[in-house]
Image 1: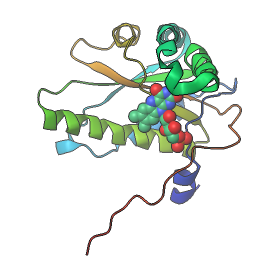
Image 2: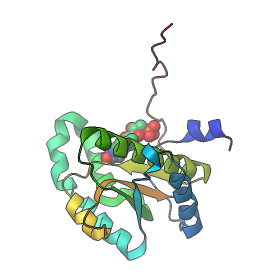
Image 3: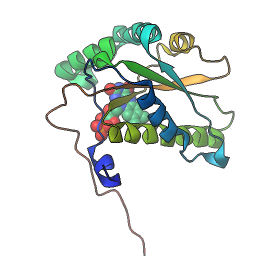
Length: 189
Ligand SMILES: Cc1cc2nc3c(=O)[nH]c(=O)nc-3n(C[C@H](O)[C@H](O)[C@H](O)COP(=O)(O)O)c2cc1C
């Protein structure tokens, strides 16, 4: 796949097949993340890869969020609510869940820099997953369970989990993908 094919075919995929995920594949997508730009080349990210027993533990923690999703019923509507419950209960059967952690910054600028830097690394990972023929979805709707997640992912005490990424081989793809607004720039002479 060339660059544009990768960028244009990356989607958040929430259903995974039973095909085992090779450790080398995970290593390659992490390598892409490691090459991302970051403020002062600080590389503030750490990726916590849960497979096997730890994946099951992490999944059980994430499933606890479903107790809170009802609060969002009016925003989601009934259909998306059901899909969201199922997604957070099972993570589409993803064989790997990768936690993403940072050391929280003291001041606002550093916090922006840390989060933006880590976002670039996550996007590198997501694009690399697409290039590898893998499926992935970034998840941040985790505020109720972050402490439990940090424990399940054995994150050191100074770091906070800001996202998890479900990764695997694609299962059923949705018929349509979220529309994109391509008119995103204001041009100034
Ligand atoms: C910062 C961020 C947080 C996200 N959080 C979630 C999430 O908690 N749950 C989820 O299912 N998808 C989550 N997503 C995926 C978005 O829903 C998805 O990117 C968006 O709907 C556009 O679809 P696409 O990725 O297929 O282009 C998140 C994406 C980003 C970039």
